[in-house]
Length: 253
Length: 157
Image (tube, rainbow over all chains, first blue to last red; front, side, top):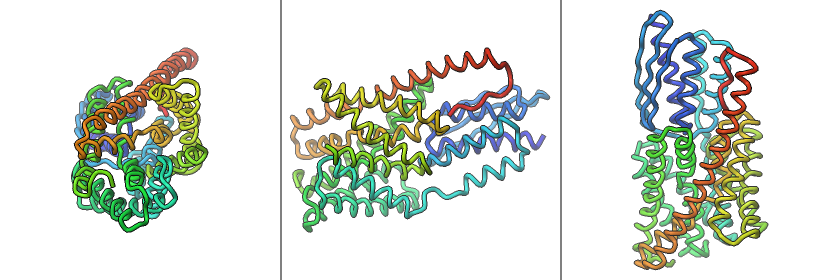
């Protein structure tokens, strides 16, 4: 029964893509259960906790299979969630052959996340907008955009060298504070606080918080609480990064 | 005020792009982000507690996001988080940290309190909206099961 094992592995792959892209636990479990049912497994038990997926299925002939998947890194990507969702909807309507399912899934996994230009544009847009939103001037807005480009570079290289998320957050936040202060000293920005706040908005783990809240309400208390406390710790890391720089440059810039 | 609403619009759009949302959903997100801030401003006109305004705005925006997500067949967080971003208290986080570094305990407590209250109000709005959505969906599902028994039902959006 080689194929059953491969099929289960494929189901876990889908779960992994969903979970790493920032989906709620209930969505991961729901998708896996539906797909397992569509492929004729008579019983599926799945437990998903923020960092791992455990699944046991029973095939129609009584064979029982268990697999565990550990999730190590996350990268929010709504397109992936949607793509896996669409695929699972299709599979539920009419199960695809295993090879076809694997191929379709590989396409989703291998499609790169945001191209650098789009990601940079997103950073510029978000940082610039929120600097203005919190009362910055046009010059602050421009300074903030420059800052966010630096933030983007730091963030990306942090991901590339696989820095721990907390360390990365502290480093990013310190770098953005430092560049904001420097830009204001150079005379480009007027209010360093507005520039920094605009960039902080990018770092704030809003999606993690919203997702974990939705986990809580759908009954996945462990994941919900873990996610929420991670979001709080991330916020503390941001504050720590800012504090680290502003301690030396003086609080009121 | 108009400028702020416009900034909320472009800011939400930025977050939409950042989370790799594609196509017409980006327009929905941008409009939703602006709407979120408009709801907040309206709530502030209607009564004067900032916390309640945060809660009401988060609640209405979240309900809107849940509805729109199902209509557009998109996962809920796709729309929800970028639309709520104008309510995220980033400035309070910053001023709390600054007050802490500057050893200004009075400021630290006052900004810290606002930070906790505002993010709490926002979270509570999201929770209530998710609860409402769950009640509606379960009720709908019951009806649907009575009408069409069997076969694999459509996965949720």
